[in-house]
Image 1 (cartoon, rainbow, N blue to C red):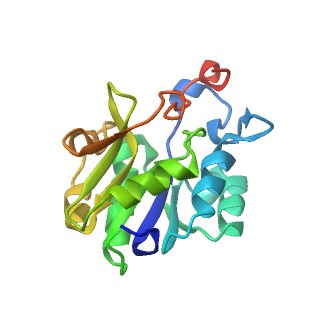
Image 2: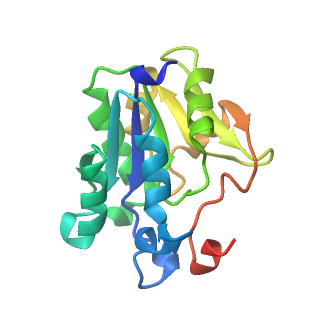
Length: 191
C-alpha cells in the first residue's frame, strides 16, 4: 500500500517505569533525544497523516513541541498505566475516523528502525485486510502495518502486549535485531 494512503502513528505515551526517574524519550542517544530518531524517520516519509500518542503536555512539554513542529497531530493518553494497549486503542479509534486505508504503528523507543523498513511494511500490505509485522527471525515485533479492516480489533486490545497476537499471525518482514532494538532501561541505550 502506498504511504499516501496510510496514517503513521508514533506511540510515545508509556510510563517507562523500567527506565528510572529520567524521561526515557528525552534521554541522550547518539547526541539527540531518543524520541527524535523515530520522530524524524517517520515524519520524513509521505504518509497521509502523522499522528503521535503522547502523555499530557505538562508531563512531556518538550516532546509535545518537537512533535508539533514536525506536523504531528497529538492524541493524549491520560492513562499510560494501561500499557501499550491504551495507546493503541486511542490511536485506532482516532484513525478509524480518518480517510485512510491503513495504520503504521511505530514505537518512539525504537531508534534504529530505518525509513526503508517503514516503507517495506507499507508496500508489503496488499489491501485493507493486510497485517504486516516485523521480525528478527525469531520474535514478531513492531513496527507493524494494520489495514483498515483491523481498526475495530485494535480498539479492543488489552494489556502491555498490545497488538502482538495480531502481529504474530501476520506476514512478517525480517530485518536485523539491531534495527528492531527497543530501549527499556538505561543499559539499553548503550547497546
